[in-house]
Length: 345
Length: 284
Image (tube, rainbow over all chains, first blue to last red; front, side, top):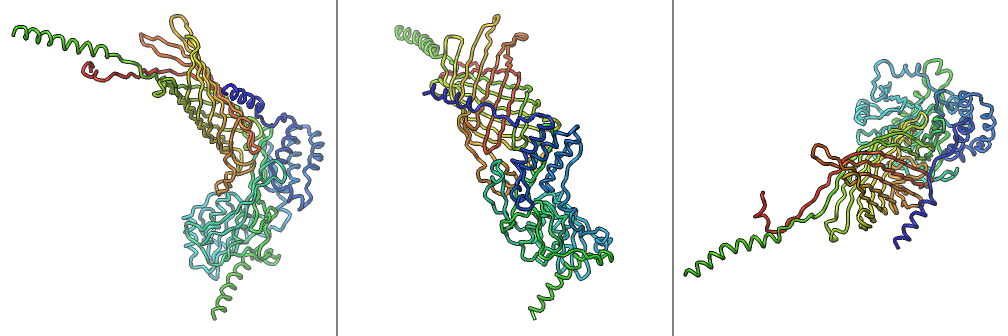
């Protein structure tokens, strides 16, 4: 019995053999093949990109295979591989090397900017407060205004509570996240959790279960829990433009499920895939969307979230130093109270 | 009267003598069990692959520490031997310019039945419970910087011990092989982020491991060399440990090849059991 068991173990371990990684060599072609394969196996938006603009990753292989063959130095290889990744039209896809970082920016640059920090100064004034990267002040008509330009750092609940306490006399709050390119999802969730007093189902998250383009897990629900600090339940208007990306896009996805929140401005830039990183034989690092997030209706928000009220900054307002979006947000909050008064009467 | 006195006098001399003789018969101390403890420290060569982090090998060096407690069993008429082996290692590895830090801590509990072959060779066969945890950390990665390792397994374990004379001393060579047979391990799915796991999406993160999907071995070769320094004796142990862990679960391929060269000292403790009623004769 013992002898049979020993033979079985040795046989099993011998058959299984060594478990090794990819076998691509550190040549131009080897790195091209390695990059194409790792994206092929891990990138999570092939199907959506195929429907959106007809992406075919196999065609991309043939197109850039021949381009790689003509590369004469590493800088050219980096440019070629960077161009190949741009075919994915995803701001979360980068190639990092000593030659720099490749980016795809068109998710933002192809659209109206809809934000001016010069115009914003007319609203923030000189005595705005700053906490955890949030600039905030009280505008005319007792409306709070908070500008959060990046979720790259953590958010302290106490600081957030003190900010909301400082705006306690305001009728409503404008949260301006225009040009917020994202950062930490946990920061976005922490901020959103200050605007609900109950646990709310806001979307779904998936991950890849295998290397196939459609190997995904069942969507798991994402909930927004109420904050442990101060909670704001008065009207909130979230201002967005195409510069709202990644974790900021996630913030919009969460906020628009809240009953007292309205999203105003331009469509967001998207970027709903949680990016993960892998390496190539030459040590270059490729980052790509790997885990898709879906909204409450099960739709992808990779290519942006439409606002509840679509509005751009008009040319006249731009020239006159007025922010059409902020003015619209103020109007919405004031109209909310007018309607409320009418209902009470 | 004189006769009575004589008998009493003789008895008074004989009884203590007889009692003493009786005690002398039972005045045997025997070794209850032998405990061999060793602590070893050394350097290691590492070769790690974890396709959750990267599809390529990270190679480097590390430091290794292990502690072994090897003893006769208290039960089973001393026919069994137990081993408790603690292992820990940290490593600094590179793939081109990309860095990886590795840290693993493990412990195993083994029970063996010895088979003596001749005077010099002893074979031991038994079972082992392994528990191991740690992490590989790739700081250049974005949302997948860490691959956590946590596993437990039931392993088959065998040992061969050979005592051989060198000059006037007896050296001991030992080879140990551990092969995990069945176990469970933490294994996230192919593209599952730890952020998602932190949200409570934990379905399928524990997998069964067996030699087909996790063919792993641990070899340990050691040489015990007696040293005599200024009338004091000690034992130096030189070891080579090859911990070859592999898994291919949820399309994530992983190997952690670890070759450690260690040295340390062995302390042998003879645990002695005295028979009852000897306290009166104890010098202490």
